[in-house]
Length: 118
Image (tube, rainbow, N blue to C red; front, top):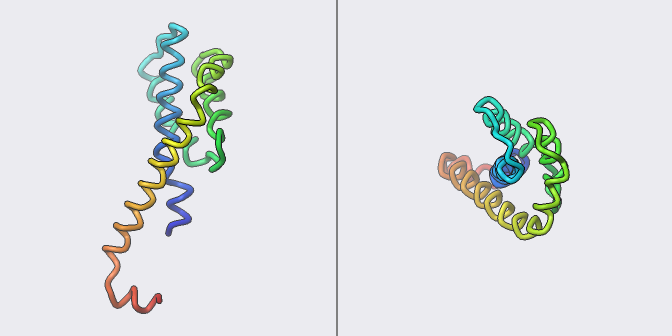
């Protein structure tokens, strides 16, 4: 169960991707329609699941998302300076989510089942 959670529970990455694209749209003065904003949110969630667990792994996906909504790809340069610190924050959120899910699953399994697994 933890391996599924570790790959699918990328809340921090999805949140970072969405916020970054919205921020860069504001920097460039691009007004995103409601449909484009929904697209950014949905694509950020999907990209968060598919992002490799390596430092800076979400940056290429952010660039693809930026191009998709009409934001110049050069804008990623604004993010590169703070990405390492933000990557550590995303990792903290992702690990906390994994721990919460593991605890919830542990609480739902009976003691007899846990003893049988050991």
